[in-house]
Length: 301
Ligand code: GUN
Image (cartoon, rainbow, N blue to C red; front, side, top):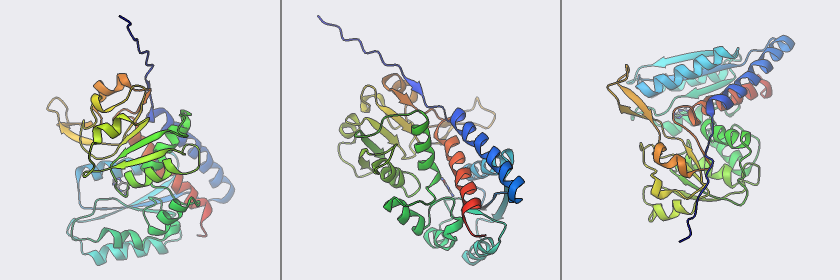
């Protein structure tokens, strides 16, 4: 009987190393910009309510700004804020010449119209890339702000020189924040890019069979441990976007973070895989800071 031995040298796509490299580069560029023009990139974040995960993300964004010499401002509003108050806060930030980038942390409370709010941000300051003008430009392949998580994934693929051209990429999830934009970017005529992309979602039939055909899987549905080993082809590249808090009494916080991928079982099958934490999450911040730097240097403030 022939024995087929698979030698699969799995490599971790290390968001810690790559995001640090991006931040080091931005720090040097920010210093140069300040010395030459006195300009310091300035990010404004709006946080409505006190959702634990949103608090953590925003705190992380603010901290990263100070680490690389950017300015940041945080506008906190209560969960029951009237929509008009949020509208006014955005208008004020739009008009403030010192502010280069504006982000409204999502999700917003249910009584607020998220699309309306995003649509009020000046596209020149739309460092999240969620405004319809930014999305339209991205779809057309024009220069614009790319949403931070998909942008971070592209930076990671580029850093590790992962071959994507002609590959079948399966994206699980169709959110405006991750699934839909990463499907567009992977499909574009660029490097990374040029994938044949299948976007799967909650109504998709035969998800397992589709995933088994994937050379690249982006799991972005927000369900801890969803992608299991029986869904992954040998040597696939697996990008885990999920960050779910699961109870863990052994931790001081009472929880730990889990991705959408059953990492321990899936990792040995893969050629490359992102860990959680330490993967895409850190890249999201690096990408946001890159967008903020570009906003500070490109717009007409
Ligand atoms: N909520 C989850 N991800 C994001 C993000 O990238 N930007 C904002 N503003 N909110 C989010």
